[in-house]
Length: 124
Length: 124
Image (cartoon, rainbow over all chains, first blue to last red; front, side, top):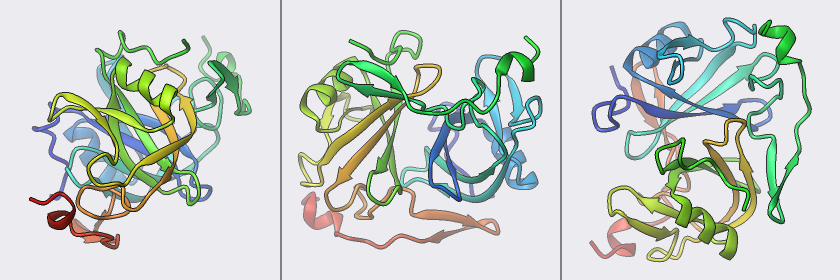
């Protein structure tokens, strides 16, 4: 199967996730070969969680799944771009995008809106 | 200075580069702390080249510089999103975006248009 060069990348390839409707960049995650194959087969974005050290079907806990509409690979075969239909918020902190912090004159502005309260959704 | 968590990330942080005008995702690169500080100070996108093991001011050879319009940091402080004014092509292979290869039914479609011939620009 046509795939990124996981060997060159040391096993994990960074994946940029972009909203297919709004073009907003939602998050950056990582895939190993298993996550890649599962994503291609199921059409549901699946990543490798570096902190939990396991496959992670995005949204399986929160319900905020990502239906994959398009998969692109970069010129060096060591990065992936997914265009997705994002249900709800992509960010585990409850924001639509993980990139809700903007640098402005040396400090951080929060520019996103919180769509859910993570303490409720993840029952922490 | 407010910055990504380079220590947690092992020194290098992935950087998503998005065209501020078209919202197209152009490339993925990496920054170490020096590249980050140079980018913030100069407003010109500066990365760490993993292959050449040196700082790399984007466009210094090709002329295809990236003027930084906005800098965002993700929720875990281990990924960066730059919104840039891209001069010419972002990709060293002459395409506007490095993500010119789309997976379609198990094979790759080239969807981008070549803006320059790398053999001329880089005098290989």
